Each structure stands twice: as structure tokens, then as C-alpha cells.
Length: 466
Image 1 (cartoon, rainbow, N blue to C red):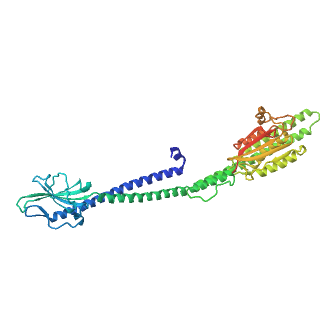
Image 2: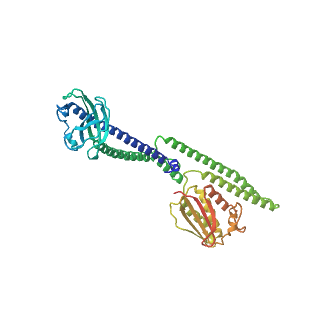
Image 3: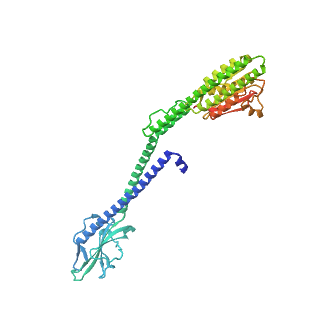
């Protein structure tokens, strides 16, 4: 898991932090509980040996020759079973203590013929020490020892004895191993449960964000113009603020449209008056009248062009706008067939999915496709063909004609405002420029190329609505 991945995903950061602490907690808990249990088992192990040592001390006696003996056997039957793992032994020490004079002079039946070789140790009377030493069958034993001084022996001589109680360390290690296995199995099951709980918490906790993403997708695709749905209280303020921004944006666009319409009305009426006055002007000044008519027409074209750009710049930023392609195309084809009826141009539409939509205003789509279809019909010999498809999030419309085409070096020039491919053909030279500007405002483009039919192909790329 890379650092960039963690920074880029809230889900990964939450999961990584949760899983780290789950793992750390389980490891610490396993180590702590295991240590506590080992200490408990060791404490019980040596407590039992101390009990055996206390019994051995209580039952100790000396025979008439001063040799150690037991008044009664110890209570644990394991001390009588050979190599059972539980043992006791009595050593006779020298006067100075530490080194035994007679090791194993008296020992449990469980030792059979084995003598415990306890390390030399100097003990005060009654003091208990712990050691580890090898025992029967090479097993390690844990032992406790105590030193006793008997001044009034039957033979009149003082005696110093070392009493030993020992047991196989496997009686301490095996419970710890069983407990550790069960403990880690239980902690592993707990860890899996916690991981599943963390996954559920993260995915369920972040589910509203997925719902928010889906709601934003609907706004972006044009299905709705505001965020809709049930969201948690924690993100409701964000939803309300976002919907407020959308509403304010729509209001700003509506005001822009109103101002654009007012400007169009304010300019078109004086231009129409000037044109009518020039047409009805004095016959003595025909050149002046013609000049006025021409300049009024140019001014009218400029007004239409810049109003279209202003309107497109506003409407292209309205979220939630969606225009189905099929209805617009069918309406434009019907209009073009009537406009160019005298040329008997065949306008064909290749089948495309009805779901194809443009993420923008219908009038802008009509403006762009209308100009491209009109140009194709003007230059076609007999046939114009329209096709549409989607590529990713884009809508692509291609219009082919079977006319004479356009040289590659002139294709960029005709996209400029006021440039016409042929001065003999009626037109203002603004159509392709308007299409190019509108397409760019929506983040798309228009490209001219060679058509398979022999003429010109215009390919319009626009943002699609899935």
C-alpha cells in the first residue's frame, strides 16, 4: 500500500489505521496474557514443589545410626511411581555446608536409581533456593531446596541435611503451550472479527459518500439539477450549501439570458429601422443606401454571433442540463430537407442508440448541428450522411457529404470568423466559427477531414450524458 494511495483514499486511510491498531492490540494482548499465564503456572509449579518440600521436612527423621529417614511417606502418589516426573531427595552435607558428603542418601522411589546432582549452594537454615538441573531421562527439572541443621542426632553427632523437591519442567511448559495455542487461536478469531467489523464500519460508514457521488453523477448527467436523497445529519449542511450554490448559479444564468434577450431586442429594432430606411431611401443616392444595407446586415450578424457566444458561455456551466440527441437531429433533418428541397439532397441518418444525449442546452446543440448540416447540404452533390456514437464520456457526431471537399491547408482558415470557403455561395462565414466557439465552451471541438463519400467530414465532439 503506497503513501500516495493512502493520501488519495479516505477508505484506505481509515482501514489502514484501524487494522494497524487491531494488529498492535492483539499482539500486545497475546504477549501480556501469555506472560501472565506463564508467571501463574510457574508460581503454581514452585508452590507445589514447596508443598512437597514442607511435607518432606515435616516427615524427616533420623534412625539410630543418624541416617535420614521418613516417619511417613509423602502424600503425592506420583513420588512413588518411577520416573513420574516428581522427585525428592535428601543429601548429607559437610559441616561447612554447600558440598554434599553423601548425595542422594535418601530419595524418592520415583528417582529409581538416579541421583540428582544439585549444584553446590550455601543455605541458611530454613532458607529456600530454586535451581534448574538435569534429571532422569535427560529432562530438565525445576527444583527447590532447603538446608536443615540437626544438633541432637541419635549418635550424638550434629547433622546438616539438604532437602530437595523437584519436578519435570514439562509440567510447567505443557500448560503454557496449550494455553498459548488456545490464546492465539482465540485472538486470531477475535482479530478476524474485528477486521470484518472494521470493514463493515468503513463501508457502511462511508456509504453516504457513495450516495453523494451518485447524486452528483445525476446532476452531472443532467437527470436532475439539485442533489437529492437521504443523507446523514453530518453531511446535510454540505448538501444544503451545494444546492444553494446550484440555485444561485441557475439564477445568475437566468439573469444572463434575460440581459442577452434585452440586448438583442434593443439592437435589432434600430437595425431593422435603418435597413428599412435604406431600402426605401432616395433613389438619388443608391450607393449610400446599398452601403447602409450591407453594414446593417454585418452588424446584425455580429450581434447574433456574440449573443450566441454569451448565451452558450452561461448555459454551458449549468449543471444538470441534458438534451437527447435523436429529437434534435430528426428536427434539423426535416428542416434541412425543406430548405434544400430544390437541390433534392438526400439526408441519411445512420442508426444510433436513442440513449445518446448531450450534456448541455438543446438550442446550443441545434445551433452547432444546424450549421454543420447546412454547410454539408450546400456543398454536397447528392447525399449527406449523419452518424453519432459515444466514446467514454464524449458524444461524437460526424456529418459527411459527397461534394468536392476542402483542401487540408484551408480547413483551419474556414474556422475563422467571417472566412467563407467560396464567395459565390451565399453565407456570412460565421457558421463554422460559431460551431467551433460553442464546442470549445463546452469542452469539445470540431474537426474537418476527408469523408469516405469523397467530400468533407465534420466531426463534432461534445460532452455526453451517460
